[in-house]
Amino acid sequence: MHMATLNPPVELEDSANVESFKFVQSLYLLADYDFPQCFYFHIKRLWSDAGVQECYRRSNEFFLIESSKYFLDQIDAISDESYIPTDQDILRCRRRTTNVKKVEFEATIPKKYGHGIQEFWMFDVGGQRGERRKWFSVFAGIDAVLFLAATNGFDAVLREDSTVNRLQEALDLFRDVWNSKYLRGSGMILFLNKQDLLKEKVERGSKIEDHFPAYKCFKAHKAEDNSSEYTRVRSFIRELFLNITRAEVPRSCIDCAHSGLLSSESTVRECFWHYTTATDTDNVQNVFNDVHSMIILSNLSKMGPS
Image (cartoon, one colour):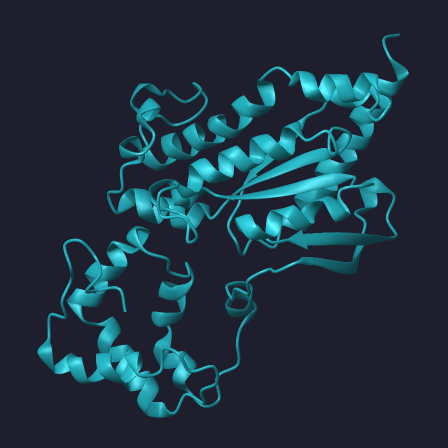
């Protein structure tokens, strides 16, 4: 419904699709809908329109759920009355997080870590600005923070503030979390997420230097492929985050350590990072490996120099 609000606006290429546009628009504010077969007919017709495809190409200019293309490309399968969602379909569904959600689950520990069953408590916190004030209620006793950063947001703006770049907001938030006096004793695992969407966006011609000018002078490490634009972009974004962890600890955190609220040993820590996609089922294994490494580093730090 954003075609007319874009600047410059986008129009349907085929005027015959106006009927479908009006039909879908009439459903926009409905809370419940049964999705009859005619709905899928209109959606398929609109999705094949060149004007709608151009609107999608410019989706960084408005808010759009990132799995939209995935489901729209499968409209024939989804419209089948015998359709059953696959695991990938379910993983690509999105539900907005409000308040703090506690999720408890058990997972099998890999044999090299002692085998058995490990119970996990995870707290899912809403990333929107209005949700962040609720985080402090769960900060105490956190062993590890899993920070998911949407790397494809380098050319998009916040839903709640159209003047703020989405990736820059993630960087600012990461800095606040990394330097928080309440989390200085917690491990940090950074998921540079949505790599599939980042690659698609870069290959589509989106320029990160239009939003982060420092990219023009950036060179990836020698071991990385500087000839690949996508590889160079993802390396640049990674360094934006890791540079935050390399900066000097703010004085407020050091003062907190000296006051007895924080042990001085906890000011030395690692940030473990991974390139991931939203549907990557190997992330749990990554968490196992990183937490194991955190325990080793913590024990070595407490032992001190030999």
